[in-house]
Amino acid sequence: MPKIAKELSAAEVRRLTQPGMHAVGGVSGLHLQVTDSGARSWLLRTVIGSRRREIGLGGFPEVPLTTARDKAREAKERIRQGVDPIEQRRAARAALIAADGKSITFKEAAEKFLGSKTVEFKNAKHAAQWGSTLATYAYPEIGKLPVDSVELAHVVKVLEPIWATKTETATRLRGRIESVLSWATVSGFRNGDNPARWRGNLDAVLPKPGKLKNVQHHAAVPWRDVADFMVTLRKRDGMAARALEFLILTAARSGEVRGATWAEIDLERKVWTVPGKRMKAGKEHVVPLCDDAIALLKELPRLEDNPLVFPAPRGGQLSDMTLAAVMRRMKVAATPHGFRSTFRDWTAEATAYPHEVCEMALAHTVGSTVERAYRRGDMFAKRARLMADWCKFVNTPAAKSGDVVAMRKGRG
Image 1 (cartoon, rainbow, N blue to C red):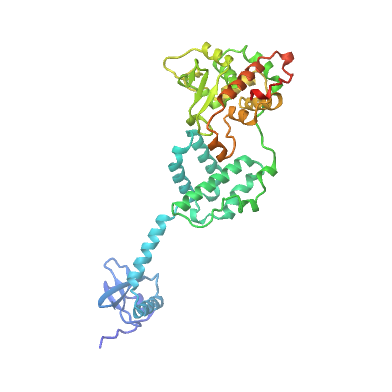
Image 2: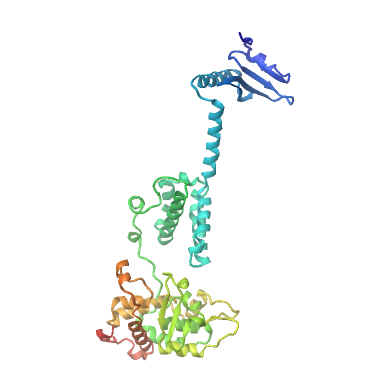
């Protein structure tokens, strides 16, 4: 018969300070272990299967005598049921470590997402805008939250304060949060539905962006006034003024003009080929150059150490603010980008060119995916005629600039 230990009281246990193993009774095999340093902890000595094992039950006095005896009884009961408490604890610890490795915050998920997607962004500025928007609006609310804990209420809390006052920013922010959470789901960091999804989700909680206020478009020079503007613009010196003039003649975006290189220009063929990496839609755009655009380019100086068509004084690209400053000095309450609207208004009001030709001149995506698959051409010849007519219009004397130019439909 195994020796039965005397059942010690709580006071007697507190007096056990001699290093060694002290049986405390109450449950067979329950001991208080005292180390040479004076630290005390509970151990249950028992047999699991055919092996003698020691099971730790916690430190003393954090775990009092009564709790230690309860834990010892529970462990013995599990052993009788065929469960190894030591292996069970080891598996639980491994699962916890694995779960901790899979648990990252929303901010960490966003940073990992941005790190993997940087190559897909058109430029460093675009990536910076992503990070800045999330840092300004999302991180203060959900940045430290485990990404698998982000729910609809959290997303609403981020978006609601700016949904009505900064609608465009808020809608972009929603899309960015949705992208981060989608990445986290695919990467195994969260499960379930995406709480930042709009359709069938947030659209039931937040008002539709289009119902809040009209989109604030870039201020534009009225199409009837563009000829007068060009007369004044051409009297101004400087590379920024010439870049702005070229922008108007080509109906291009500011960034496309400011980043234009001589390698993209073919003066003989009267073509400017903008590579896809510099286009908003990511697709190469071939721009027909009218006579005025060709004449402007031929008068520009070419720098041996700078490939840019419109270089800044110190060698880099002109900034968008530089072009805007030209208009500001001319006391015109409009933006360089607004000239694309000026051009589009002119095509709609004063010409009979087909919609798709005018849209393609602006490098807009036209038609459905199926329609684009069947339409192989870029309507270059028609666009060349359109840009030639635009060139004539911007040179129209002020007295006639208000007249509608009746283009024949056959010319489209």
